[in-house]
Image (cartoon, rainbow, N blue to C red):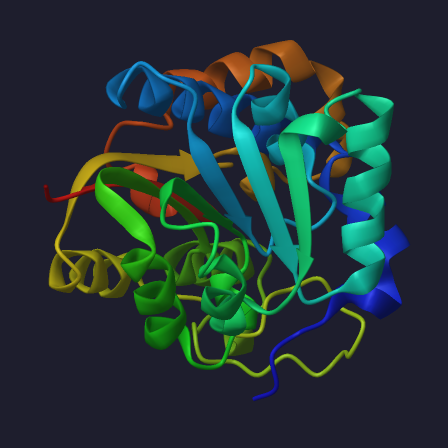
Length: 258
């Protein structure tokens, strides 16, 4: 499997992620998590890497509160969008942009030094050598620093296809054939990600299901009908079991041993 580059679908990505109800839920839930995580880290301005950061949505929000944020992405198109957003938000002075894959980022950080926090959101499911990519990022985090990983949940994929009646697709191993699809190529079982983090000397401090109800509704009309109530429901249950394991994505926060 070749790692996915979003140069050819940058417009589709932006419209389908943050321009929809699913994007609004993702934004609200993850931003709550990040604020809690920041409160647990040393009370200082942090050096943050947004690995595979795309259009820099969360990177710009973090830069706006004073943190120094580096965005890297394999897509030059997405990286240009991140630069434009930073300029629009007037946070360019707190940001750096590197055109690089996650796997090759270490060579660019040699002079900059290690980072205090890595964001790795909705990237790992597009990468072929998944464990190696996580190891690369884990190694550049300072002791006592943190890892924020959001991955496409294989359990949620099975549930979604079963609910839709696509019984032949109700497996985490089905191959995606549409080249321009935004359905990730390589979903992960939660236990796999948790095990890798433990191997790399990280302690998990939080887990959140992202879209634990939204994607299982029978129609898009229901997703929009009373969105505030739906969002409140998501926020109420997203950090409780069994709902965490049913999220279409799972966000994991972990701290590196000192």
